[in-house]
Image (cartoon, rainbow, N blue to C red):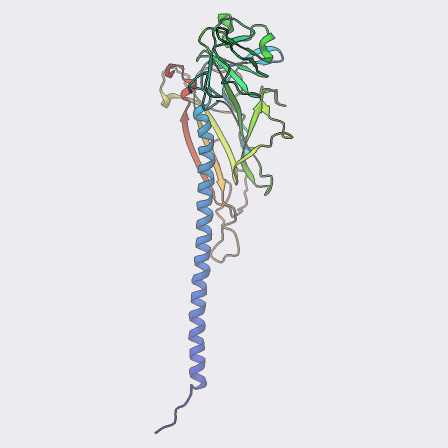
Amino acid sequence: MRAPRGMTLLEIMVALALTAIIIAAASALVVAGSRIIHNTEHTADSHDASRLAGEAILNMVRQAGAGAPGGIWVSQGGTPTRVSAVFGSDGAASGDDLWLVVPDRDYLGEPCRTEGTAASVVRPGVGVIHVNCTEGFKPDSLHLVSNMTSAALLSSVTTTPATPGTPGQVQYAESTVSGFSNAPEKGGYQVGDLVYPVRLVHFFIAPHPTTGRPSLMRADGRLQVDPTGRPFSDVDPATSLPMVVQENVENLQVAFGFDSTGQEDPAKYTWQHGLLPAYTPGLRAVRINVVATGRNQRRNTQSTAVLDDDKPIAVENYAPPPPVAADGLYRSLYTRRLELPNLAAANL
């Protein structure tokens, strides 16, 4: 019988070499898989951010302007001024902003039962408004009085509850403004007009309060002239901070579509960037463009540098200034065009 022997040095070296090759190959696969997963998650993250931000805006746009296709009368410095329920600035590289006048979601609910529902005007005229009930009025809220064509925005509203056989009364800050109503050409409010609470909603791009990354923000508005002369401004941040709608939203671009031919043909709308608050007939649609990024930079095949193609992208009238350095952040663009059903009087 031959005595058993161990492995020779040469055999051990060959085995170690093969093991090292296998481990290296496995490590390369793990690193490549990790990079692919990282980049895929980053891309999916940017897709989700752009889609969620865009849908959040469109959800409000669908509700905007109910009861005011012919504009909203506001008191600006004691002078009745008619503004649009939808408008915004053209910020180009800094991102646009968008203002919306949105009714309470319960305004067409069962009247005289639930807070937020509309009350009916029961006496024509100007000044103090007489309504059939006051249960629907919300304290510290703006209210519209509307004939479903034009509307007037009321602030500092207080009510005197109705009693049997006696209508309720609505006092408001603009009641002493000469000629102020939802239809000044008709001599004031008419029987059957509706009064209901509304919100002023402002979408814009601003740094995230924690990360500093650009994000889509939403603020409630107040009836106060802003530094650019527009009739609405954000609520005092000392009492109400803007809400982060979606993180990592780099740019918001809004285009406004007008039926300038009067043919009710969406294919013939004319489009513009930026819309002043002054009421302009024919506004029928908006086009929302949202550009979002992932949270972290994507990696190249060596996982040592960012991808060269990850740069800011052009959309609408925003174009990155050349040359633009790659930053490794993948961009997702969400674009939707939406008709404004509440601003087409023929649909009411």
